[in-house]
Length: 325
Image (cartoon, rainbow, N blue to C red; front, side, top):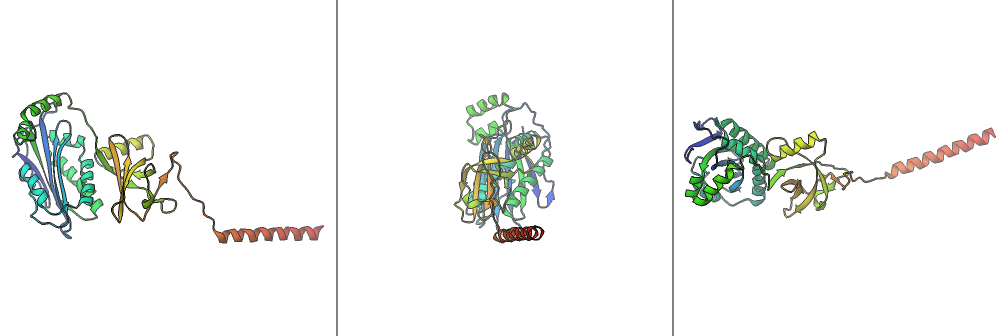
């Protein structure tokens, strides 16, 4: 079992393969295997966003154990080194600057969605995780860029750990580590999406849509599910195969931001959707029968023209009748 110093690292700027090859494969039936995904991201030109996260997870079940996520727009300290030991990185991340809560909450939810439980398990079991880590990095970068509207650069590393190492670090007690290892032998194939947030793109309807500022709980909103990895891609494929539209009820709406609203959708008991939209746009809202809410508008000019035509036709008919009879 590799110790905490045997790290697999991917540097995305430049694209250098500085990831070490792990000679020992992690067999599918191994228990007590844990992983840490470490990342530092920033905007190289504008320089207005810095962030990092250290995500500790159970490599057998994919369950999240500890997540330190930080985003700032005022870098107070130095950039963090993803190759540093896991515990040192956790202490350095909060020192980057003042936490940008609205942006941090959105990016953290995107990270959890993209780096889903099944992806964590596959990464932790991989013999040569370089290519898989690159795919994960590209997908996280794409999701982050779409939300921040900035070009980002990422430095990412992956580290395997054992239950004993976590027990030595105080995360697991010795007894708990042994109990977890025993339980994992019987739960190796379990995958849970509990607490997963999926970023959804709303369908904009500028004519018949409902303004974001008026969206309320129980409204049915039509969205677009993004492809890629994780629960979002699973739901998208299911809806496509069953020929269904992605229409979900609103669970709650956060309008505390003066410019944007965060709309939380109830997809099922475990998975929630989140829409981030400016308050001046209109979204396609449907009623409980999935029929679009429409409005009827009458053009006064057209109504007058129609009346004139009716009168003219009546006059012509009267003249013809007078001349013939």
